[in-house]
Image (cartoon, rainbow, N blue to C red; front, top):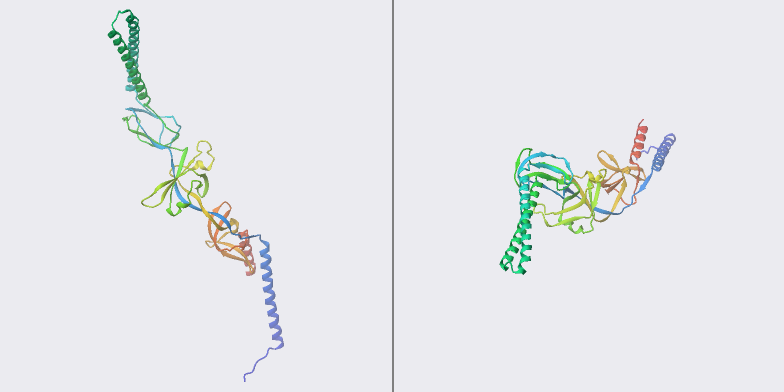
Amino acid sequence: MKNIQAFKPQQTQQFITGLLTTLILSLITLLSQASQADEFEKILVQASLHTETLTLNATIEAVNQGTVSAQTSGRITKLNYDVSDFVSGGSTLLEITDTNQAADILAAQADVAASEANNTDANLNLQRLKALYPQGAISKGQLDQAKANAQAALSRLQAAKAHLSQAQQAHSYTQVNAPFTGVVTERHVEIGETVMMGTPLYSGFSLDKLRALASIPQSYLGYITPDTQYDILLNNAQVISSRDAVLFSYADSASHGFKLRINFNNLFNSTLDKPAAQLRPGMWVKIRFAIGETEQIWLPRSAVTKHYQLNAVYLNTAQGWQLTQVRLGQTQGDQVQIISGLRNQDEVALNAQAVMSAQLKQNLASSQ
């Protein structure tokens, strides 16, 4: 039978003293962590109903855009604008020689004057013959001939005036004016160049009315209604909202998505300080619209911190603050969406950076 060595009284006392010391230190640590947790403001995680949105890429394009072409022939004598210049509606873009057009106006004016004289003479002759006919001085055929001559003279006068109006209109084409207020995107001609009718001169677009063009997957068509509000985002910040949208009635053969065109006023001319004035044709933007409601968790930005490239919050537990990884979703103002990592009724620190700093200081102090 083996001998069992008993503890000596001195060893037993040392063992009890060490055990009590360990328990006291553990209790002090727990109390320290509990008091530390009370030092920082906590917030209660509460899931609530939030609008779920769909965000898609879109391209800004101008509603009014096109190319101005020559409506007469001649040589360009003056170019008033170049590419990227801002042009007011009605401003003269360029001038074309008007020698032939001015000569046509003079000829038409002379023709009008001659026609007016012939018309006056024919009317006077008709009035004389009308006075002589009751007296039997002229025959019925002579009176009818006078009436026909007066009608023909009036027709020639009307034709001469129409030719004059046409000549004046052709002369006005020697000064090409901007059809709308906008920006020049391309100049197709050079000064001194001879142009013919139909020659492209300038291309441009208007900044007053713009639209965003996006492609909607067919699975989301059911969420689009005439009352749907679309938010246009630039650099993830809301710029403008609009309900004026047109959904194409056919799908793209390549992407099988449906084109969505969202119209809006750009406010470029009236309020340059507005964010919407930053929108320009050709820019990439994002559009966002609601597709339902779901329970979501949102926290202030201050409750989330970066830890080794991971997003995390400080969760309040019985053992103190515990760094807990979370996955983030959308951001709206000072709030950030928590997709996973937390449950309803959890308590987290409102200022994650303050808790992290306090824990670092505590770790440094305990290691010294």
